[in-house]
Image 1: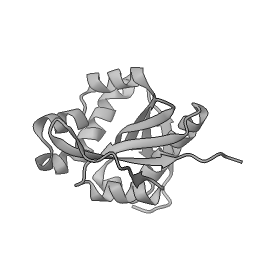
Image 2 (image 1 turned 90 degrees about the vertical axis):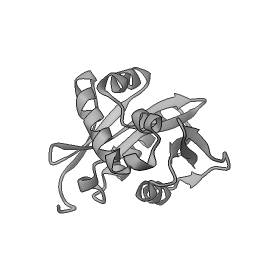
Image 3 (image 1 turned 30 degrees about the horizontal axis):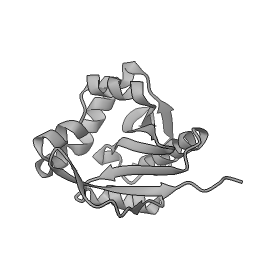
Image 4 (image 1 turned 180 degrees about the vertical axis):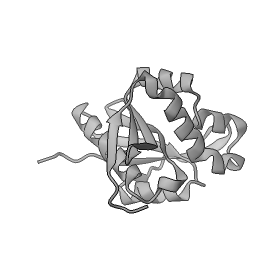
Length: 163
């Protein structure tokens, strides 16, 4: 794949729920042995769960040359934007989809008046953690928590005023 391929980030609708579900599954299935059964199910959502998430906040899809390669969702929580369901297909990693999705979430969060972005991730998703760090996220002092027995920690990025 060339890095000059056209990348598009668009907001999704209910008709996209099955594709988003498939992207989540394909993005995390290689890590399935590291999750608990409940943790994996809560990460690789089914289409009905994606629809429920869409009712809570926006969900975006990254397309590379018209093909779905990634997704992210967000919801406002206490003047912060919580990023969830962030995923990029293995074959599409390293081509900017994750960065573009994070930028779209930031733009949306800024428009919602949020002063901070935050997310939870598992310690074994090292390439995702590197992406978040490159994009200015830092681990918080919240300590480990878990998703149905799968360990998680929180990362955040303060949004500075735009001039």
